[in-house]
Length: 69
Image 1 (cartoon, rainbow, N blue to C red):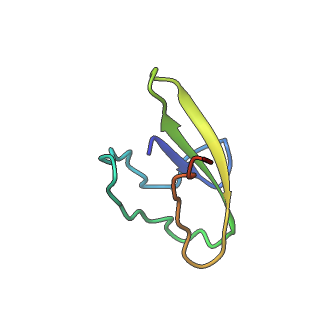
Image 2: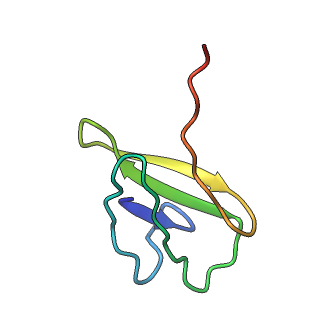
């Protein structure tokens, strides 16, 4: 995870980037932010920063999208 914040203007205070191995999990902290919308940035296979918006409440989990057969 290269970026985690409440908007695209800055990361949460104290956020440190983290490398996640394939098929593994990681926990991260959003500090005192209690909103339901997050901006998450990750590096794609070509080194570009890709941003995505997450909307969740309570515990937020990201899961891979399963390919349709």
